[in-house]
Length: 369
Image (tube, rainbow, N blue to C red; front, side, top):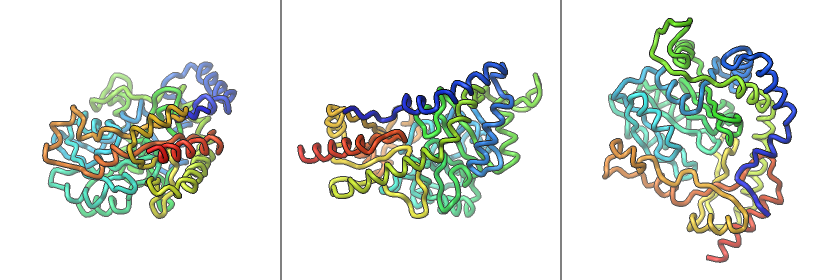
């Protein structure tokens, strides 16, 4: 048996005619940028996340960059974030002239640790940028309390967490703004690149609308130096179709994650994914900690089981970030997680038989050690 990490073909086949109809709608309107199809999708996401504004942009990375610009980040301003994430979380800060300041993570959730964040706040700090990693919300109440006490903005990196919530409040509706990604393998994935920003702040939303179109409200008149960052209308149409299924897909991911947990909890060598109290996690990834992670991954691949590592190198160890991290500065939990965390296959079309095969493969590896 072969078990892929994701199965985009199966997803496409399940809604092929709807996707093709959405593409044809765009082709027949000849509205390839902006227009009613994009506006419809933005309205649908706004209602789904329960935010006041939703603005489509070119990618998840663009969403972070434009949101930071709209928050007024200036050269030298500090943004506290996690070293255990995809590089775009931190590179977006640098690309708008800010200074990324890293704080360590919680060992159980892999999220940015509020206590470690508080230790890093200085007079130059402007933004806290937590990541809702693996489809579960970070400890947002604690970050809100910190932000209020120190007069800071919160920007949520919600790239992996559309549909997730904490205490009934959706990811993307906690901070001053939030950035989403529609990379093809996300829970809500485009057939190409795409991103979106949510906010409840009218001035922030207006600034983002300007920034995504070269700072222009009307043709050839530019109020700001902006970007060319649009969610393509084709992608908006496709995503509109997929959004109808997202709640069911996320619920299926939860069922599969619970099945993994029930079957794997008997193995004391593993540390399993744990949900924060009050959390509704959507399991963009189901991760475990496993001894000799890299050898385990090779063992499983020989059985036809494909896994992934998110993330093997903490951001502060990346060559391009050496100027932003002191040689004596250490983040032991992030560094430990980078060596131990393994993402197992999970996608809504996955069968219990496939999960059983993955579990038996893990057991075989543990016996072989």
